[in-house]
Every structure is written in structure tokens, then in C-alpha cells.
Length: 213
Image (cartoon, rainbow, N blue to C red; front, side):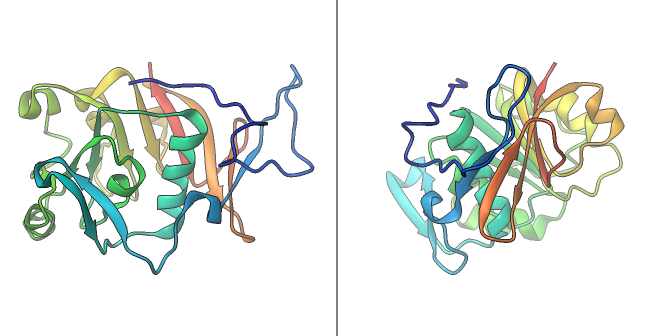
């Protein structure tokens, strides 16, 4: 998986506001992505890339607009290109497939009803307790990126230790003390009241991007 730097002046997908914070080296810390530039709308269907179908497969997915926008903003802002994305506790939320359309996405939930629904759409599913699953044993490789959104299990750090590659990325809204011991936070992102995704290096936000140590 590659992580590329972004040219903030030349990238038309990123809008910089007139005022933003600077760190000690003079580099900007806060970046703002206008929602409309991400090509997303809460009421519109989005395309999910299903390799077995041979082409893009349009699905009206269930998703939280702020969550999907944050994923897309991170993908564009940091140039994240994960080969394998793993979403434990996904229920029937398809946000990672919309955000990372060139990646292979694996959904997980302990409830069979959600896995059956996604499997019927042709998506990759791994059923069972995510804290017990070792993704390398299930798939023959670990994930490059794990998305933990509103995960309700007792020990999410077990998922990261067992299923995320060293140097892989975590995007989570549940950065607890156990997780902090095994990842290094990079940035946080939130959807602002006026419809911008805000990405900061040194301020708390709804979703944290971190790298596994």
C-alpha cells in the first residue's frame, strides 16, 4: 500500500480556507475538503466495484454521509491505496466500498443476517467474532487498512494485533488506551456544520487515522 504526499496548491479536490493553522515548521495543519468536491450525496446511489462482476456494480448502499465523506477525504488527502480493507462490525454499511473503489473490501459482523445481505450483493464477507479472527488465516494475508466505526466489542485492539499488517492504517472513531499502545495517530477528521471535512494533525475529531507501529 502506498501513501503519497499531496500538493495542496495544485490538487483541485482539496479546498484550503483563507485561514488555517500552521505547525512549528510553517506547514499547514488543518485542511478542508468541500463535500461537493468529493462527489458525494446522501440521497444518491454510489458505485461499488465488485471484481467478480467484471464492471462497476451500482448499489444503493446504507451509509452515514459524514463517515463516507471522512473516508474519501482521507483517501484523497493522504493518497491511501490499500490493497485489502477490513471492516469489522460492519452490519450492512457499504461506506468502505464507496471510498476505496480500487481496493478489495472484506466485511465482518458477528450477526449472520448482515453477512447474508452483503454476500447476496456479491461482496466479500468474513463471519464470526472479529476479536477471534486472524485475517491472515482466513484470507492468506492481513489487511492494509482496518476501519472500526462504532465497534461495540470488548477488546478492539485484538483485531488490530491479529489482522492489520505492520505499517498498515487504522481509521476509527474509538481510539482507546489499548489501541493507542499499538498504533501511532496521524490525523483526525470531522464533518463541519457548514459541510466541509476538516483534517487536523493535532486536534481531536470524529475519525482518527493511525498507523500500526
